[in-house]
Length: 122
Length: 382
Image (cartoon, rainbow over all chains, first blue to last red; front, side, top):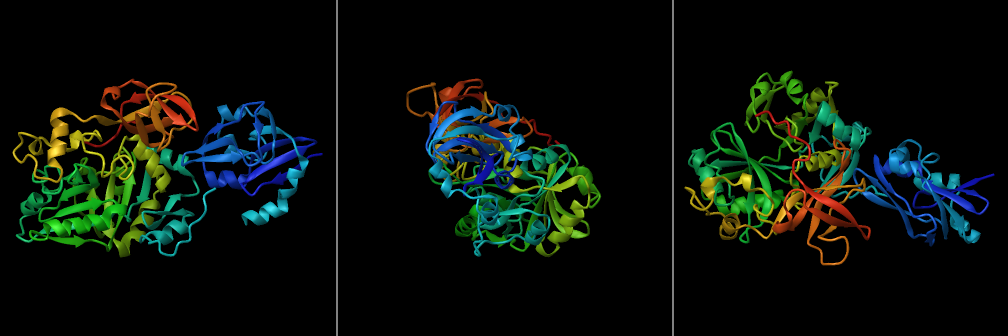
């Protein structure tokens, strides 16, 4: 059973036990426009909450993607290197960025559920 | 994420309502509320312009008539030559030329288009510089010319391989024009100024139209299914692929025409030994750069990987250590090349084609290669 939470910086986290799969929201991709390049963190890297973890580049600009929680990067989505446009077509599923082992579950307390995130972007 | 700027002080062009109707994403640019893209998005808009035709609102740019008090256009041309290093006298009636206003240090105050309309000169200048340019013209040319700001006109660019056929439906004379022809023409029954030029590397036109008629003309052009509205995002990626300078980024008050690789725009008559050599602000430095070379030069840059190298990225000669040797002034993703493209300044000794350099992006040095511009072959109708 996974729960999906959101950050105010427009990342989503699908939480399964102590592992979170992280990506950017559909709202975020619509604001960025056509994505042409994604830079992902190295597997094994330790990220601190709110640290710049990945970069998503559209034709227009580069934007940082922040680590929503502290933890170690377990896996990254290689499909994004070959097909960055996946971020535009399927931001909240196929275009996940990385999986992170959640070091401190109390950090999840500050995140939004879907209803709160919808209100945030309204 | 970008945040919508609701600054009430932003100015609107005569096409503002049309942009909003078309779903344009409005952003502040040079003091105007302008569409950065429409629902199609930058990528599709860019590619559509290269394959069909794109319509751009460039009404924020300044349009100025330089009217000689003597009634002789040559007097306006001679007067303007005191402010630019171009041969203005040689612009034939019905023709247009690219020029720059220079400062006392040989730097560039703005770049502009100058057309000879027979009895006066017609200038198009950058939006962000237009007040300063006008003041500069008034301060220096008022004795010989009336400087007439044409603030009641909009400017629409129509660019791409289908531009000619699209405009021909509304202006039978358009197909006979060649690159840099410019003059008054009736378009869809409206008194317009039309030039065969643009800022995309594509064949195309810029149409100056009375503000009150601008929306009607734009809608008529957009009725053609080949013509799509294009925002500032694609305008930037198109001009970058075409190797064209953006004022305030690739050229500014610190760059001379020689450093900027714009030698082609300074005719022999204004260079050392020419009939009207010098006589423009900063001539000493600019002519010295022509005669002895400049220490740095604007070049095109291609990357190996897919990571775009953007404005401000520092350039290095080696993969580690050493001081920066230059800087990227424009960079991004080139949709027609499906690859990143950039331009920047490097020491002249490192400006040869195929020179290997490194650009620092997020702390990493990415290999880049000095490459020929334009990156995409232009299709001007000569």
